[in-house]
Length: 150
Image 1 (tube, helix red, strand yellow):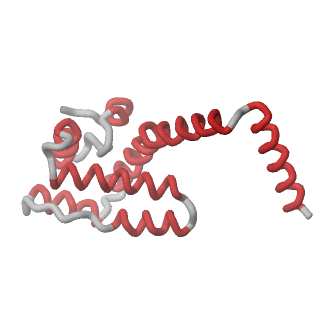
Image 2 (cartoon, helix red, strand yellow):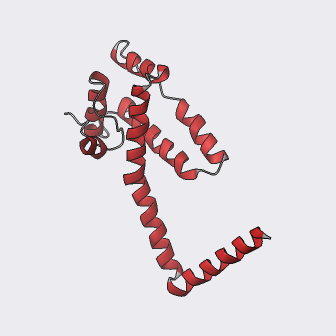
Image 3 (tube, rainbow, N blue to C red):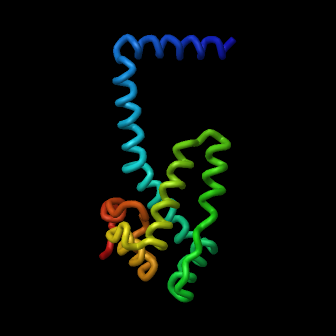
């Protein structure tokens, strides 16, 4: 019985939205949400996730730093794929997209550094100064939280 009430309320909301907004407006609002997610929410989440890895002294992450600094080699990270798959399985598509964006930027920075030189310099400095430059796909979160260095 409660499910019926919820579905009828959603139907009313849908009818009300269509009354005031046409499909093009809804598409524009959805696009604005997607863009703001990718360029505002995701970098903030990336910054938080990365700094937590340093705070808890994560072994996998420390190994990545060790391989890059000491052994001068880079392995393509596999752990984001598991989180992407788990996110998709549970229908958390935006979280999966966030991990995919991180993985693409991080892979490009290490394998093709000339493609995005500003972010490459930003991230490579993080490898030498572990308390700075936590965001991989943008520099503004580090500037905002005072962890930016160049």
